[in-house]
Amino acid sequence: MVIANKVIITCAVTGSIHTPSMSPSLPVTAAEIAEAAVGAAEAPTGQYIARKNQSRKVMLGAVSFLRDLPPGSIIFTDNQGGLLLSYYMCDRKVVLFDPPYEDLFPAPCGNSQVVSLDPRKWIFQAPTFPEELRGVQQYYNPTSKHAIWVFQAGWLVDKEVDFRAGLRQFGCPTTHDFGKNILACQMVLPNGTTIK
Image (cartoon, rainbow, N blue to C red; front, side, top):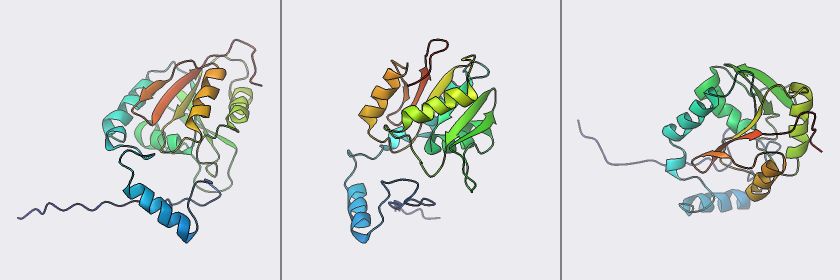
């Protein structure tokens, strides 16, 4: 048997199941698609994730960390993080694929509960994150008995610098990072404190 040293590399610059309503970053016009394709080809040091940060080892490290959270912990994630959790940790889908969609979707996952965003939002966005976090706190943890962990494991983080600043503002001074694109962060809020 002869094994050829050929590699096929693919890139879905328009996503696979995504629509423009799920992410404003999704290229739609021919010019946007062409620009995204050229950007992907030129991106070994650009905004795309390096191979080492997509490795199964990195993902399993994050999952191992989450499995060790105290029982009853709430894991708040965007759609990208929810897909990873569905596959690697929860043994069930913890994100919605079909309508009717919910702003926040709760699903059990081992000893924790995952709360994921409406899939049309796709990723955490800095301007809407405080309101979404407030919703998680009000509906799923009103008595502050359980820790709320933010889990982000995607390829895109809207305004990452602003997003990380928001995490610090809402009680997460330090993130647990797994590669460059996976983070877990406990929101440490004093009892009775609500996010404003």
